[in-house]
Structure formats: C-alpha cells, structure tokens
Image 1 (cartoon, helix red, strand yellow):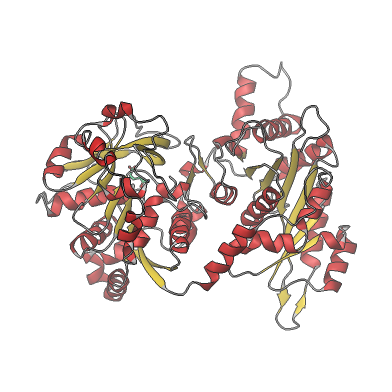
Image 2 (cartoon, rainbow, N blue to C red):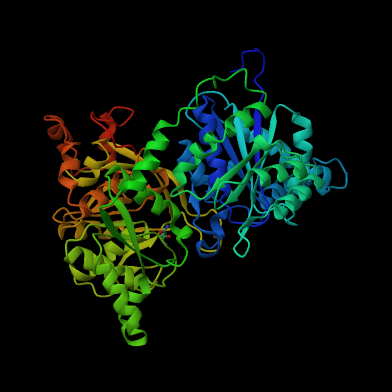
Length: 607
Ligand code: GLN
C-alpha cells in the first residue's frame, strides 16, 4: 500500500442501514472489515450511536443488549465487540461516538470560549466536531502494529431518516465530499422482503430508503440487501435502475447457518472488488488472487457440522434477551467449536430456582431446576441489583455440591464466595453489602474508590493485571502457566480482604490477585472438577480462533476433557518448583518474572 509515497490517505467505508432496524448491520460491517483484511489491508472501525447517553455504561442490557467493555475502560455498544472479535483488534472508547459525546465536547468548548463569541449551532459546529472526531480516531492504531490502518469502517447506528441521526448524516455527507471520491465508499444495508402470498422479492422499500439517503447528500456505492434467498436478476436490475447503483455492486445477504459465513458470502459476490474499486485501491492491493478466507470458511463450515452437544446452563437475570449476554455466548461458542462440540445454552432465569417461586409459580420452578440439573456445566454471569441473587447462590451451591463444572463471572464469583461462606463457614447471613448493607458477615464489600452517587464510568473498569498466586491450579495452567494475565473489569464491589484468610483456611483458594495482593481476582475450589470464579470478565477478550482460557476450561470440564486439555499446558519440570517459592506470597514477590509474564509454553491458549 501507499506506493505513491507521501502522507498516507485514510480510506473510509461507511455502512448505513435502511427500511428496518435489526438487519445485522454491525455483523455485516465487521464482515466487510474481515474481507478487506483478507485482501491485505489493515482495518480499524468506528461505531456511531445517535443516542444522547455519553456511553453505554448506564444503559440497561435488557433494553440495549450487553455493555461491552474495552481495554481502556470504555463502556461501549456491543457492536464494538463484533469488530474486536471479527478483526482481532483492540478498540478505544473514542471508537464509539454518541450524540452525547459530541455535544459534550462542543459544549465544553463553548464554555472555554473557544468559539470566540459566535452562535454555536448544529451546522457547522456539531457537524465539524463529528468529522474531526472521525478523522482523529481513524488514525489510532488498533491492531498492534505501528501507524494508522489503511481503511476505517464506520457504522452509523439506527436507520436512515431517524431524527436522532440527522446531524451525523449531514456531517457524513459533508465528509464524503471533503475526503473525495476514491477515498470514501458507502454501503447501504437494506431489506428486500418476500411477500408470502405472491412469493415475490419486493424492491420498493429499498428504493425508498435509498431515495432518503440521497436526499441527505449521501450516494451509495454498494447495496447490501438482506433477503431469505439470493436476489433474482430482474430485482437486481430494477434496484440498479432506480437506485443508480451498478447491478454488480448489489450484493445479497441471504440467510446463512451462522455469521462466520458472511465474509465468504461477500467475497463470492465480489464485494471486495466493488469496495476496492470505490476506494481507488485496486492497483495497490494484491487482489489478483482471491482474498484469503480459508480460516473463516473452514471454521464456519465445521461449526455447522458439530453434532455432539455440550449443555451449559446460564443462570442469569436477563435471560429474555440473548444480546444481554452476547460476549458470553460468543466466548462459550469459541470454546465449544474449538473442542468440536455443539453448544447448547439453557437459559435459567435465576429467580425461578428460588424457593419463593416454588410457591408462586411451581411450574416455572420445576422447569428451571430441570434445566439446571440437565446441564453439563453451569455459568453464572455478571450482574447488578439484588433480583435473582439468591437463585444464583443456589445454582453455585448446586454446582459445588454435585461437582458440576462451574464458572462464575464478576457477580458470579462474588455469589460463589457468599455461598461458600454460608454453607461451609456456617455464616448464614453472609452477603455482599450491595444486597444487604447491614450484614454481619460482609464477604463482598464496596470498593473504596467507587462512587455511590454517580453511576456513569465510576466503576473499576477496563484492563487490569491479575497475578497468579499458585501455579499448580487450573486457572494458571489454562492460561498457559504465565505469571500474570490482563483481563477486563467492570465492578464496584470486591471480596472483603479481611475474610480471605478464613475462607482460605476452609478450603477456598484465591489463585489470582491484583498487584497489591489485596484484591481477589480468581477463586477456585481445588478439590472440585472445575469450580472457578473471576472478578474480571474473560468473555470480552475471546476471539473465534483464540478462545478464552477459562471458557475453554469450562467446556472441556463439561465434556470430561479437562485433564487432556490441562496436560497440554503442563508446567515443565523445575519451573513448578521455582514458582512454588512464591505460592503464599503476594504479587509483589513476582518481580523476577520475565517482562512479558510468560513462563514458557503458552501453546494454544491466549489471554
Ligand atoms: N454488582 C457487582 C459489582 O458491582 C458485580 C458487577 C458485575 O458483575 N459486572 O461488583
């Protein structure tokens, strides 16, 4: 790339949506990124969310899907998770633009007097701020290599014509003109419905939405049409004629068995040729050969062929909307596929397994327990608020007593500690002060650095380091016997350090702690087949080809394959002895560990 010399020019691909929401625009945009990457380009991405929240941190997962957490602590839209997973990149909080962020920046500037007495307006001040933001963020390297990417994929959330997105469409119209033809490619994702009575593919909704797009100053280069089957030739011709898009630039996103097929679906219809053509990159990139999507295609195909099920019960609060736990589901899927198992998730509403439900709704109670008891593994995810907490505690107890593989994440770890304190230490009222501020046995407490009055962005957020305290434990082995691991966090409460020694004396092992040794990060029951809780959220760093270590452990344990998996990560002789010197110490004693924290064989497992 950049053979012409001089300053490299960033190329932009804008993805908009029309007709209806929920077309899978985010996954389409991510797949476009994958395809461009397969052509040898470096790709970054920006997601625009036209809502007023400054970030997704205060939004209910039940309404909006999960809050995705980035390394830098940004609490962002779940689409950024799709980008990170598909492109194997690490984004920053600024890669998620919201109306709230833009207005806040402009208002701050106004208060500083930066507008020199001018009237501050949507055009040009908000629209300029949007364009400056995009240009600045597009330059941030996200793939671990130095220097900016070649292409920035921008996804505009919502549907064209929404009142909320007007300042963004205006700004992007100006932007496309400013960066100029050859540097900007607009892909409009739309719907071509089929009316069952006549069985005809209807192009009118797409025509209308393209007309809307044009009236806002945006001209599509490519149409990507969602439809159950491939578009018929006459429908393509009609769309081409009415939307002024060449027929070869009209792509059908027909239904596929799983989303990993999308990059090759786009490639098979030569979407890369159309995009690179619009971006004036055909001469620069080696596209004479087909883009290399071997890994994607074989993963997508092998995923379709998996037969042997592994049943995981997710005992949570938001079981009605699977997007609430999207990263978790993906992490389970990555691990299952890599162990060649078909993932079956049983959603167990936590409150349904509580005693109360047995009286109020015995059918729901029975159904929930049946699901839990039929599972090969139990996962208790993160959460806030006290609804369903007692049910989660019961699920942890069930998994502990019946030796069922268990993974507790964040709140899931905290309830595992509470359950242990109640059942093994006999502290009946043991609780988190989040749920019972007056408990006499607070085994989970509010962190000193938190805020009880401001909820946005006030948690312990983002990537923090966990140091292994014991090398002869499942988590350390699964992470490849490293000295430490960096994972993402999002919490206000923590295990009470004053109760740690009592809990440890009773058999609970805190195998990972932070750099002070005061904050518990990983808890394990050494005598259980697989019982692990983490204060962090390992699901956010799982990738299709690099499943998260502890999810891999859960699935392997649920299939009876944990021993062989751990065998693959055995600590070499001698190393185990060296590490055991540090066993009971805190993390500061790990000072002699090599800078990258990797002892030796990290074969296959990535943090
Ligand atoms: N509510 C708990 C806390 O704030 C757990 C948070 C979570 O699970 N993400 O610590």
